[in-house]
Amino acid sequence: MYERIDFAWDFNYCLYVRDEENKSRPAHYAIGGNEKAAQLSDIKTKQMTFWVFVNMGVLSALSGLIFAARLNAATPKAGNLFELDAIAACFIGGASAYGGIGTVPGAIIIGGLVMGIMNNGM
Image (tube, rainbow, N blue to C red; front, side, top):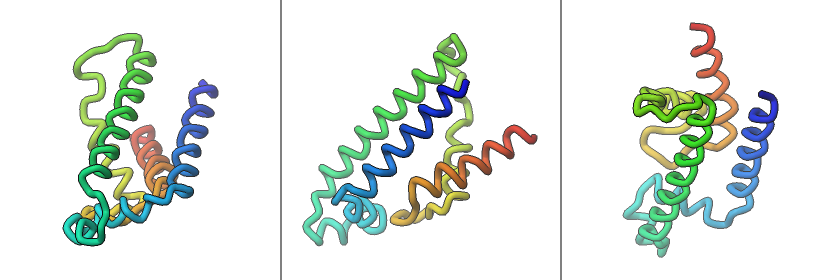
């Protein structure tokens, strides 16, 4: 069990470091805040949006594989209503519904821990 926790922490730390050292980070915030203004600021919004969706697709596939391996089954309703927990964790962690605000540590550490405690406690 602790191996999975270590892997999750290491993976999230790698994402955090990549996000901090990446020069396109302000472009992600600009697109999230106002896509038209970002496009007028000479940011390749279509290319950036495409790669963000590719990144999220790969991460979603990875999480689905890990969850199916944990359940030892791949049922169609295995992750029912998990998206609501993820959205709540992001809002608790400091993300804005209007875009352009939020951090990886805020969403994962603060929001994820609060939602985990609430799910286990209830």
